[in-house]
Each structure stands twice: as structure tokens, then as C-alpha cells.
Length: 358
Ligand code: GLY
Image (cartoon, rainbow, N blue to C red; front, side, top):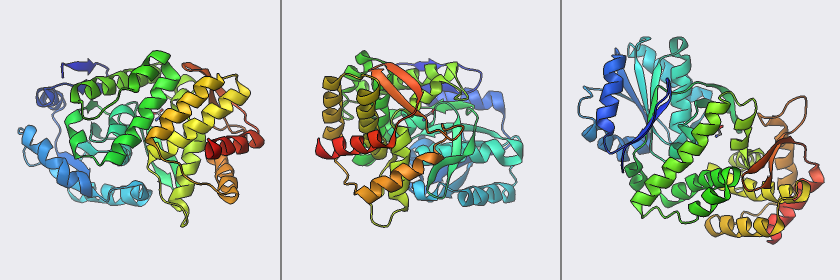
């Protein structure tokens, strides 16, 4: 991997063979009083040893550990971390390094952005999803009950260090989950990237590193134009309106298997693309192709009529809504988005029929 760097005042992204050198430079400039590393019980075992063996200059960093998984992305986890930081003497010049997937970077970013009104933090994403999406752009926060990301702040980390080598530690379904966000980048960005992303093969490390970087560039360009999601950043939520509702519903329901974020978003993208074809003239041939490609990677989930009604009822909690209206991002074609579209419920039900019968 050659040096790939996005320089920004905050939130610079580094994907290089030489992460230790760049991290050292960031730390030398910052001169933190304490360094804390946040992991979950999974990354503690499979990622922290690699991190510490490479970043030899870190002297006795203090390690904070949370339970892995979306079910722990709650304010209670933050309270425990704030208390832990406080009891270990963290001050305003302390640094938190978030070593993990999207749950770790979301929680860690939020905890750091709020502790003593804000300490510095760095993300070292270890999942594909966190590399291509969660760690870039400064969205941090927690769920409220099963409702996704309802509480949080937007604050860029000081820097993001991407090492695709961590993907070797990741279960296959988590690779697929992250791939959903790369597919999303293809759909919202261009035919060219949509086609390119079809060749994704995590065994091919060099190509994977390049595709991750392409996705980071797409996301970063959008975030730079609209950091606070007033406008174009909403496109990064393609497939997320129904996807988040499906994810929340499955997380809460005792009848349903919990879905990984990308698994729910994959379903949401099929539904959103169907709705786009119904309401915005998205080409039907491409709809079929996209559906086939997504279903090749993500097995179908069954939804009963009752499930669908409950999922639709959850749409009122979507963060893009305003003035009581549910706001969908739709596509006129690949790479041609339309924001804040209202969608009649009967079209949503038809989309679920399409998904079921495809
Ligand atoms: N994951 C969507 C965003 O960062 O805007």
C-alpha cells in the first residue's frame, strides 16, 4: 500500500504502510498528558496486540474495554467510560484512541467529545464498516433503546489511521456488512465506482486497500461539502431510512435474528431502489441487476405483514425527518440522487413485496 493521506485541520485520514511514523508525528504535535485506548472485548484480544507491537513508542497506554456489539451502544456504556476516565485521572489534555469497529469509534468519539467538554480522540478502525464509513466524517453517538444513533454529536476525530491488515481479524459476515456501505457509495456516486466495487475480494489485499480508499474519498468529499448533514450528506443515508428501522426492529424483537448494520442497510438499499424506480424513474433493468448483486452477498430475511407494519411505524424516528415528514433519499439513476422525498406507505409495502418475491 502506498501512502494515501487526506490532510485536514481535523479528521486527517492516513492509510499508509507507515502508520507508526504518522501516528508518532500526530502525538508529538499533540503532547497528550495521558493516552487511553478504547477496545471492545473482541478487539482487545485480536487487534490490540497488533497495534501495540507496531506502535512501540506508546509507553504504558491505559486500556478501556467495553462489550462488543450494537446492544452495548448505549449511554450506560458511556457513563461507565466517563467514570473510568475520571477515576484514572484523565484530564483535558488526555487522548482517547478508539481501536475497533463502528460501535467502538461511535461510542469512543462521543465519550471523548463530551468528557470535560471534549478531549482529543483518534480512530483506528478495525472493521471494514468503520474503515469506509463510521470513522470518517465525525458522527459519534449512541442508540436510544433500539433506535439507532439518536444521541450524539458531530465532531471529527483528530485523525483516522486505516490499516486494512486488521481485516484479517474480522469474521466474514462483518466483511460483508462493511461491503454494504461500499455498495452504497457506488450507488450514490457513479456507475464507474458501482461497477468497480463488484470486483471486491477481501483475499486480494492490494485491491481491497484501494477500494477502501476510493470509498473513503467518496465519503470525505461529501462530508467536506456538508459536514453537518444539512443537505448533500443526507445521500450517505441511502438505504438507511428503512435500513435503520429494520435494524432497530430486529434488535428489539425477540422473534427476529439481530442483523448487522450492513445486512439491514443492504435490504434498505433494495427497498429504496425499488421505491426510486416507482417514484423517480430509476431504470428497472438496473433495479433488477442491483437487487441480484445485493442478494448474492446478503441472504434474504423474511418479514411478515406485522413485522413490516412495525418497521414502517419506526420511520418517524429517522433523524432526517423534519416537520413530521419522513424524508427518503432516492435515486433517479446510479449517481443521481434526490433528497427529502416523501414516500406513500403503500409504495413502501410494495417495495417489501418486491424484495420478498424477487
Ligand atoms: N454514515 C453516514 C454519514 O456519516 O453521514
